Image 1 (cartoon, one colour):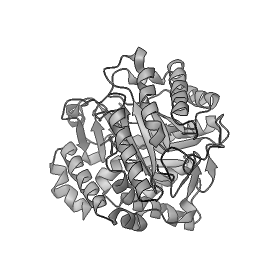
Image 2 (image 1 turned 60 degrees about the vertical axis):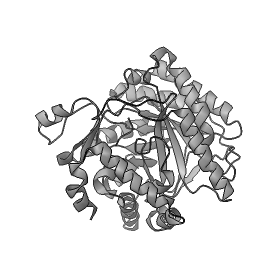
Image 3 (image 1 turned 90 degrees about the vertical axis):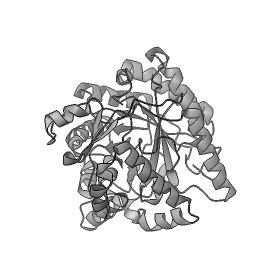
Amino acid sequence: MYQALFRAVFSKMDPERAHHLGFGAIRATAAIPGAAPALRSVLGPRDPALAVKALGLEFPGPFGLAAGFDKNAVGIDGLAALGFAFVEVGTVTGRPQPGNEAPRLFRLTQDRCLINRMGFNNDGADAVADRLARRAEKLRGRRRPDPVIVGVNIGKTKLVPEQEAIADYVHSATALAPYADYLTVNVSSPNTPGLRNLQAVEVLRPLLLAVREAANQAVPDRHVPLLVKIAPDLADEDVTAVADLAVEIGLDGIIATNTTISREGLATPRPEVEARGAGGLSGPVLRPRALEVLRALRTRVGPEMTLIGVGGITTAADAQEFLDAGATLLQGYTGFIYQGPFWARRIHRGLSRGRGRGRGRGLGHEHGHGHGVDQGHQGRGGNDGRGDSTSGASQ
């Protein structure tokens, strides 16, 4: 039904408008009393064998929604109700910004890919923090823990010069860490000028250390796991350098990878691709490079550090390939647009069936310990200032 709806309706609409309509429907459904938990009980991962312990947290399954879909933390519960094991919101910047001029999101339907140059359009760290605080207060009022693991992805405000980037990230981390189950530092979007320069280790080291310190000060009684999201376009030696830095400073994890500026491997005619202009490319064509980066990272950081694999996952077989390549957890985005609202359920059920046939690996054990952080903090479930454990594309 979704495929027919996509061909007849969504594919003929501006992609960004289609996103807002679809997301609005998800949020409206979740607003119906009892709908979100009921849907989650049916669509969420239910096989105990799929559970993953990572980052000091217990994930009901490995497959979550990448940053970019819910930039402003307005639909967490509706998205989790569709079966995602966790939801990463953002990218959130220190200041509110409108993003780049529209049109800025394009489909390459023949390749099942997207090109976006959204430019981190979002309400800003303070507004998103207020929204997350209200959600946490509502959960406390209902006297129940938050069933959703929420990551918060932070990036640089476009108008902030590179030399002031650290202060911008620190502002976001300070505001948002109290409401995040984990924080992701995004230095890999191709759509904010100069952002990818922050991936150079001599720049990345002080940035990550400053964000770590800001999170510690904002949430002194809980360790908020910190990850960095890197680009697939990094040279192999730069991937190795980031891996070594992550081990050196005790980073909790790495997300590999963001969108690519490459246009190689597409079946869509080149003139049509060029007509879409600049932006980050996501979708199945990204999978080979994302797997290469993931394997290189796992070889370098060892077996314990949490690695989140993302880039071109469409099927459960794709997801299993990422797990076999060393991923602890997985994320997707573009497949959600093309596969529809039951996509996460299909991924988890496919992984469960694969394990039943003896093929599944990479699940059911702990990651994210022993990297220079105090793992005595329990993260989710600790006293995190949120009461009873409350807790497109990414550009």
